[in-house]
Image (tube, one colour):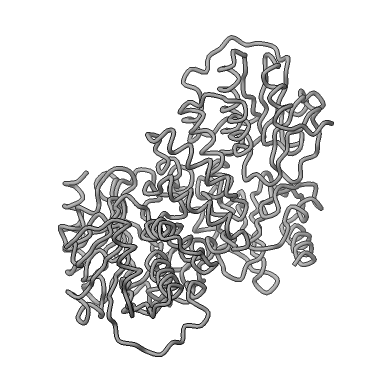
Length: 318
Length: 318
């Protein structure tokens, strides 16, 4: 594994050919923005490139995709991952591409250094923040699509510039995009990303909030998106993104835990830190990881067992 | 009335003495940040200055106040208002100070030009954005308190950089504050401003959301914070700030209306526009005003009458 810098990444990207860009399963605004901006940049350099994801891109991110995405299929000569901390996060793509990734561009402190070359900046708020800087370094000519991709990645990964991971650069790059592309409706993008909720989602939130559980002197909350609640409210997986914010609403909270039941007895855990607890370290104990203030893992067991394990781990960290 | 520029405002502020700074009733992050930053700046110039508000400053803004606020009382020689579009918004201070305001610094498109001198930038996202620029123009030496005030004003008035009113300058100035004062916990300020909710507030939100009303093909929503709901959930006026965002959650919405019952039959109306409707123009029909996408007014009548009037006005604007 080589940790590379911008000069080396530029050499790599200008020298590569026929690129598959892998993004993580259950894709979010940052990996989608990173993946499709990189596709656009590589195409502008005359290369063939496509984005691969194990899961479909949710409809609300459709505006980030190129207008014409049709291109004859081609075999990969180069495989790049963006915003993927661990090959496990590739979902169904893992089997085919694990061990073959030549470049990983990422900002997760929990990156596993699985790729041949790694461009990692764990202080960047988003993979899109690294890419913004890299494209400028490469003198790429930005398009409106690239601007929307990078803005959306930075905005979504910082909770709309709200979280502690927001850097001065996040703001500066955003301002530069706004100045260069004043006609993009940034406010409407944010509205779609953060404010719009389906009626089912609104109902589900109320159901989950009303059953929020408090532990450890109210310093830890748990919200359960059980299969039952989701079924009763006709909520789909894609409706649940951003749900994690609910767990941090009470003022007393240090760690908020949201559990989505994937299948009976299997929970996708999203952990958020309100102030100073390193939840990436907690999630790593369960084979997960992420950022210091936002991390996740997968955990199995009965509701009681899962609660017991998680609360004990949080208690140690407090 | 003189509309003045930065040079004239600088002359005014460096030449004035014994200043009362008036902010609007029901104070929010922007007027509090503007008022207390101006107090700090004037004090740094060796002047006496105090901030006056008809309502108490909510506890969660206490971190913006100077550490020692005790100062012998003094009579005003200069009266300045910040973030006050209309003298009516001074609340109980109106009676004493209306007609006597020598300088108004504001960013509301609905400003009534009631002051002798007006420094107005209706394109600025916040009064604090104007003041940031003005203080730099004046070569003021910033302190951490001033930085927190200006950051909080810009962040709160843009919904944490989410709304369409956010300008490239909002982001640039924020980045500059973050770079100059890296030890301020901006993420924690945002958490206090946007995420933390009292248990009563959480309960009240659920009650109000579950009774959200849809009108005009679901393009208009109404949320009623009635005296009854507030009493049942032990919610206070100060718990209700930011509640207006709820009304814009459904994807179909163009105009979201939140009504807080002040006393039986008297409603404080907050109107929000999701995309392109000018709600300031609608609220002006009822004697109110504000920004294009966020405005308010006071309206009297039975719930049915109020609904009828507002829905009719919104229908015309759609």
